[in-house]
Image 1: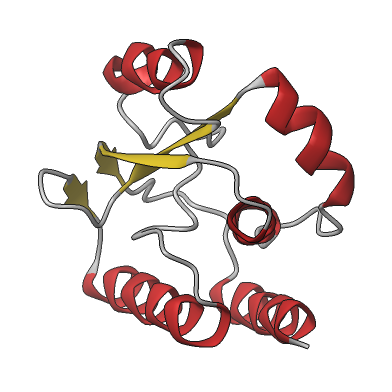
Image 2: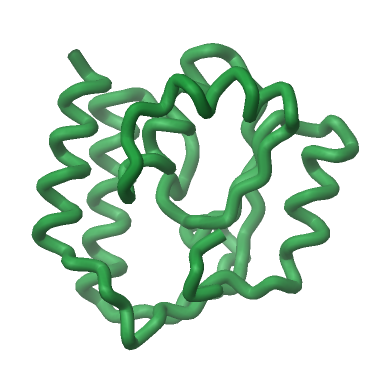
Length: 140
């Protein structure tokens, strides 16, 4: 999960149960599913929706929200996938999900309550550039 705890921790038991009960190999929180409650500015909302649209189009990713930092993986999935993820920055989430989908791992999404940290240290332009490089790398 994100270090700033933007996702409501009340969702943690459900996230873990999805994996522990074998309903999916990866469980991810989503800020963009019906039932999600998201508090953030219009700029971040627009960028997030645009980025996820790009992922659907360019990489065929079939999740609503690739970058919500609220994820659980089974031990098997973690052992198989984590060594393959090259990115150590914000693109990590996307790369993990693209690899998981390409390899046939089961991914479940759940709507979450998420509140943007007003003191966020994310540098948007730099992050966008790095993410686009990552998309290009996975697309090739």
